Image (cartoon, rainbow, N blue to C red):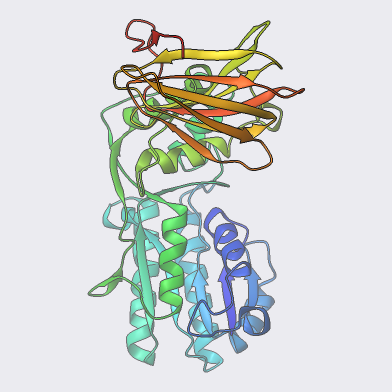
Length: 381
């Protein structure tokens, strides 16, 4: 299968090509990707002769190339409608009825130079399909965001993420301005469905099923919160298909390469250390506890708060006792054989390092620590 991709060096093109190169074998009813998938990459800088050659043999066309930031408005029609016309003429002259997928824009509904040029390109593709019995896919995309999108170009998300990651002030003219967003991975997933004949379609147009309605102010709020999360160690909402999750992934892709790491606040004393790693609004917190040899930590219980202990290095014993009983429960733990020890409410508990090296324990707690409401009560085992 030979796939022609115009706009190969662009934001969507790069993501599509990467995904096509990494498709698992059998992704399409036994389709052998490594042996049968061949990509023909074409971009605005490519020789026009190359487009003519590619259209002789391609089996499917992803027409992603276009112009959205020209030096003058005349280039809109040339770069969007003109290139589309050239592509379709080559296919027709070569008697190639390969399906054609084109990325248009929701601005095709607006009366501006860019929108008009995209609408003309849409109509060309739809008319070409009708006249030549060719399957066509026309996607009017909203604002696409995700990794590899150019900041200060055509995406407010990319621009804001780039600036906020570098502590550069952003400019917002209207925080209540409404925006429709679509995530790049959702776009690519849909394009792969189109490639296999399983596209989402409403009459003549195709669409991405997952989109987001938001405002410029909300986008800025999320991105600022991601920067602040390095100080408050809050993990953003990671619910499936949440806008926050996808914006967070995008934000991280714009971090300067010398800023991937950041320090944590370790509480260190003669007994060892305790360091909070992550907090979440509804999933509690994760910490790492280091206990020096011969040291006992804990000897407290909780009313509602629960914990999970996992020793990942060293040897020790975890003891629990129901606060009304005298019976002590012991779990001997070993970092070479990790296991989870649940700490129920109403059980006082301690961890003892009976080895010769540091005992390192990862602790999940059902609540983020609040010094005003600690729900922690001292009681010896």
